[in-house]
Amino acid sequence: VVVDEFRWGGMENTGATTMNGDAVFDAHAAIDHDLDGLIAHELAHQWFGNLVTCNSWEHLWLNEGFATLSEGLWLEHRDGRAAYQGFLWNRLQGVIEEDTDPTAPGMASKRYENPEEIFGKPADPYSKGALVLHAIRAKLGDDLFFEAVAEYLRRHAGNPVETDQFRRVLEDVSGESFDRFFWQWVTRAGVPRLRVETSWTDSDSFDGGTLNLNIEQLQPIDGDSPAFALDLPVYIRETSGASVRTSVRIDTRAAEATFPMRQRPAFVAIDPELAIVADIETVRPGDWALAQAEHGPTVAARARAASQLTETGDNASARLLSNIARDEAEHDAVRIAAVRSLIERGETGMLGAIAMGRVEPASFRAAFAEALADLPDLASDERLGDWLERAARSDRALTVQGAALIALAKTDPARAHPIALYFSETDAHADRLRRAAVEALAKTRGEHTLDTLLALTGSDTHFRTRVAAIEALPKVAPDNTAPVRVLLQDLVGNRLGAVSHAAIDALVELGDREATSTLRQARENARSDHDRWRLDTAIKALENQAN
Image 1 (tube, one colour):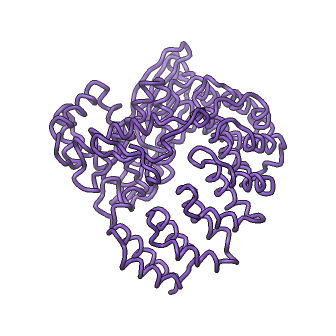
Image 2 (image 1 turned 180 degrees about the vertical axis):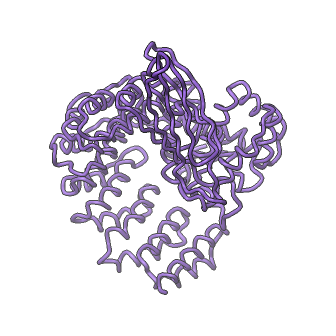
Image 3 (image 1 turned 90 degrees about the vertical axis):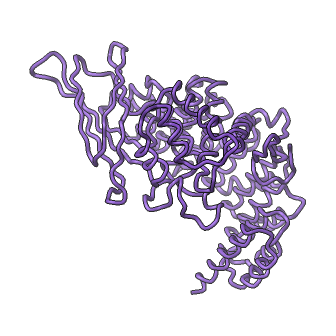
């Protein structure tokens, strides 16, 4: 069922998934847009969320983790294992960036004032939940994992569940204990930060030598947050092309392992299947890093190696990164990892050459444009600015146009500003160009910016663009806040919750203490506990600013 102005992407009502109006799109939008992931997610909820659902918000990850994993499983079915790996790799990047505080609430935690906090916590029940389920799949193998999932659904059909009930099903089916596993990855916050040094020592006593692994956990470790206990997968590629898979047990801050071998390996990849939800830095000989980036056994192995080829002055690695970025047969995740390493190295000449070549498909062009926003000195190669401007103005894919405009706004605001103003009056599917224009204008802050954003807060604007414009107002009106404050106070309590919430947050960002009375009045008329919680939070924040 498609519902106009529906706030979320989808909602798993039993037997009748709700989607917003953006779910209907034309052939132009379909160039770089499909709903397969969303459909797979919501379809999975018919089992994980409807047939069996979480008993309380604490256990939301059981619903959302399975639904998110199902997006990846659909990609694996449709496009192959590389697509599944790329999906997991991209999800992992968000988790390792956000889930850093061991004292924060874990993925399954009773620590929350309002259910909305569950959806925004660093230990994300969507991405981290999916990665933990993938880790269980890797631990048990497909046959046992899917047998356990089926038994979980059979055993608890029609009933609410908690995390321990899923754990007990896994233990019954596999015969293994999952008690510590669930405490580490589900209850506890944070992920391990591993530094793995791999090296080779020639032997004086036998024909061959020794592969050495030195592993250290770098995250804070204390009595409340002990070292993670895990079996770290190790993949060894021999020069003959044969491979060896093994693992190293770690349950302390540091660990060592040695493997006698007849020949020095071609490379050594750590956790190539993403069986561990961890941030892994590998220190290794240069030739091993190059070999893994080019020939690693999985998307994750190649992306991890490419992302760590950041040392300058090494022409061989720069050339390899450039070749990987150009390789249309390679997965986007690996190609973008290579691009980001080139950016970190300051290889603007190579990036400019990539831009002047064939940049396909559209998904890679969009990610390439987004990555260029992080380039410190875009002007050092005029081809990059030219490419971003062309992509913003005329690319056939809407996602590419939006990403290019936003990147140009960050790196060359004067060049981006007229395009942003033009896009603010341009219709497109899901209002994607206007939404990009709003984000760009918040960066360019040129002539007519405030008037344009104020106009886009009106009720005749696509509701997502409207919300984005409201959120941008505090950023562009630090010295002319009077009309902004009046508008925002009028929008508090709007019939669209997303609009009202954006206005409340913007008033807090502006520090508009005079709005407190408006917020208190809105609280008296609030229609839900959720709205009252948001208003209470905003009032408290403004009062704290006053103190």
